[in-house]
Each structure stands twice: as C-alpha cells, then as structure tokens.
Length: 156
Image 1: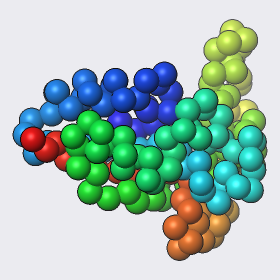
Image 2: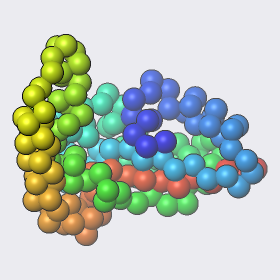
Image 3: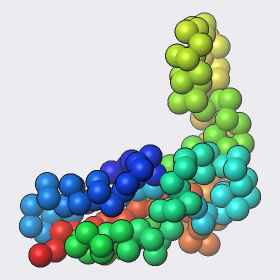
C-alpha cells in the first residue's frame, strides 16, 4: 500500500480488509508521507507530502505501528523510504515542475503541452531531484525522512 492510507477516510477499515486477504504470516508493506519529517517542518503546508487530509493523522512511526497492531498485524519495523524523498522535496521546492502535478493540471484544463516543453520541464525536475540528494541524505541520517515504510506481518 504505497501512498494509499493517507487518501482514505477510514484506514482501519481498509487494513481489516487487507488482513483478511493476507495468507498466514503474509506481509503487508505500507508507505505514507511522514508528517514529522524534516521536509514537513521546513515547508509546512507547502510540503508536497502534507497536501493530504489524513497525513497528519497517520504519517508518524508510532501511529503506523498502532494501526498495524490494532488489526492483528505485527508492525516489524518503520523505516524511512529514500526512494521518494528526493522527488517529494523537489516537488515542494518547485511544484510546477512535478510531472504528476503537471499531468493533473493539463487533464483538468484539457490542454496539451508541446513535447519539447514537456521534455525540458521533466529534465529540469530530474535535475532538481538530483540537487536535493544531499538534503534527503541528511533527512535519512537524522531519521526524519519524508516518507515512512512499515512492514506488517499477519499474526493469528
């Protein structure tokens, strides 16, 4: 469940359903934006990971472990996810360059961007992600990553 729970009105209900689908000792991987991340502290409401209503409710290590435990899932660890941290930081710094944001905007406005402009915007976004790498490494070192991942195993 990569970036699913923060979009749901009732994440506990979904975890109950997912638990029923898991085989005994099956493992569920949950990833959500971290409401306690360095990026969330720096950017506040402008942080790309904090744009979702439920992030502040579930995007914390102890809360994720509690969610897993309430549904008889053993939350074995909660760790940071370095994979998404650079793009999230880049999207917070330059939201207009984020390919996903751009796609949603174009779809809502029923527009098309010339291919060369799209290629330049994506190259600029990729360069921004690479430039953000030192900060995302600092986040990982400080254990305040922009996203959290929990491995939860079915028990009982």
